[in-house]
Amino acid sequence: MTLSEKSAYLKGLMDGLNLNKETAEGKMIAGIVDLLQEMTTAVSDLEENAIAVSDELDEIEDDLDAIEEFLMDDEDDDDYEDDDEYDDDEYNFADDDGEDFDYDDEVVYHVTCPSCGKELELDEDTILEDSINCPQCGELLEFDFDEDDEEDE
Image (cartoon, rainbow, N blue to C red; front, side, top):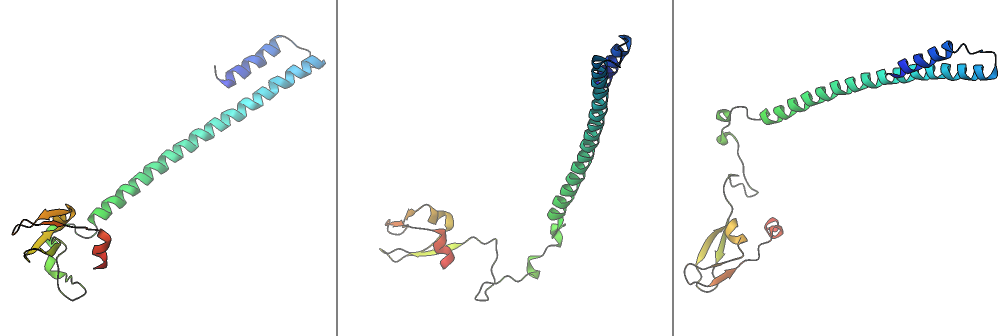
């Protein structure tokens, strides 16, 4: 039974009892039943408003999801929609000395063995291993590689 139905049922009981609304008890019961009917109407209105707000929020959420999807798709397509159109040669990347370099090139470190003087070219992964044996003389070469040191160079 809904609130409206329960309120109407109590009103019907009051009317069926033929209460005298002129006595103190009758006035009180009639006032309580009227109050319950008003409260039932107010609660019903609040429920309807809550449902309407919930529906609006669902629509707003759907709109925001569509906007987010659009923006995320747009970010993916921003610069190069077709990889065939992108040409490395049309961009000139140079370091501070004016020398061209390629971002895809791996960083190479030049290390000289203190025992035999052989110059080694090592990649970053090898340096991060902390030590290697010199391929010429077998001397253990230890590295203290810190990324902050790389930024200073």
